[in-house]
Image 1 (spheres, rainbow, N blue to C red):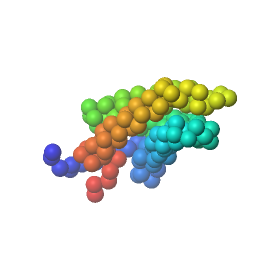
Image 2 (cartoon, one colour):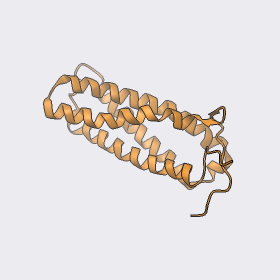
Image 3 (spheres, helix red, strand yellow):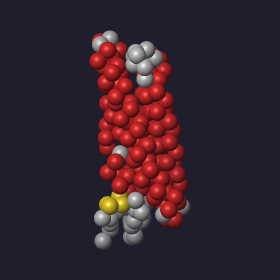
Length: 153
């Protein structure tokens, strides 16, 4: 890997700070927390955990879509980012993850949030966590190897 000599500035930034990395933490935390909430519901049968899972899925899905807008702005408006295969892979993983997370959330809406937890809800929760890991790895490569949104001065 050659050292980065020039950074790629973000167009979706506040005072030079990229917005996308600012917004992804809560949705990621919610969707990873959903793994624990689903496990707790399956272990205890306590409806509290099903309701908590409903809220975690909603915060994760909606917050993720909001965060993705800032990433999409950079993907579509910064030519150097558009040329990076890693950026397209990161975007593809994020769209798949958010699509699953959204469907998982919609599955839980209604009178009984735990009704479809097995096997569909739990399966989507675990697949979402896997896609988060892949997207995070590719996002890290964009920052640390390509200096996307990093000031190297």
